[in-house]
Length: 276
Image (cartoon, rainbow, N blue to C red; front, side, top):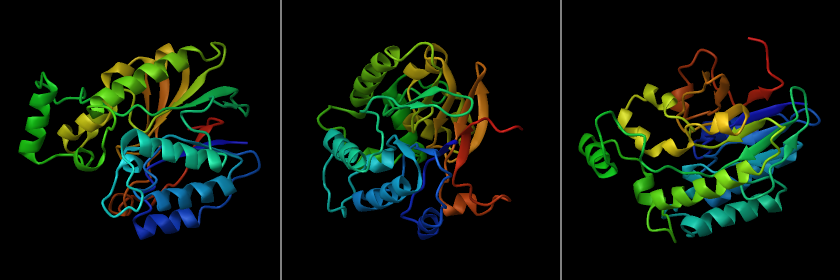
């Protein structure tokens, strides 16, 4: 019985789609965390999640920015909160746990732990050093040509801005985490990193604007995290912050995983903890 995790499957790329298609079923009792960026088109998201739900005992999903996009060619033209709710309804129809459901407790080895999928977005507070305001940081990003596609395809409706949507999600999630059983450790799951430090490896530092919020910087300590699972950066690795293990579990784009000696790694094991 294992708690596994993946993210950033991006099955719009045929090589990634084949990797997901070929993923063998888990062992009896295996859980799989999917930390966002499955695909951009609703039909592709449904295909992946239905496949994974058929191969694992329990699937826990948190959205990434790509699921929240409204591509011009997607027959499903829902935007913002309505698109997110459609994704939640899709998951519930497949028996997949979402950020809107009661947090499940994984009972396996090195557990039990409360698995908390979250949808938090970002608020442009991960700024390049010296940038004091969001407007200043965004102007610099446009000037150097590092602008996330979210600016064109991730609509915050009915909120006035993405940062306002982020603030609402942070407030709601913070309240829910505070209601968790204090005697159980948590596995915090979010597409975007909860702390700023992982973004300091980005090839283009300005992209950190679209990578999280400073408001979650101490959540791994406050909410008794045994592990934090995230994606988005396409820099899969293990790091430690305040004694807490952070796992970046992304597959990434083929151009990123092809040059790696170990090749593509589709799934990472969170619990039981594997010896180094």
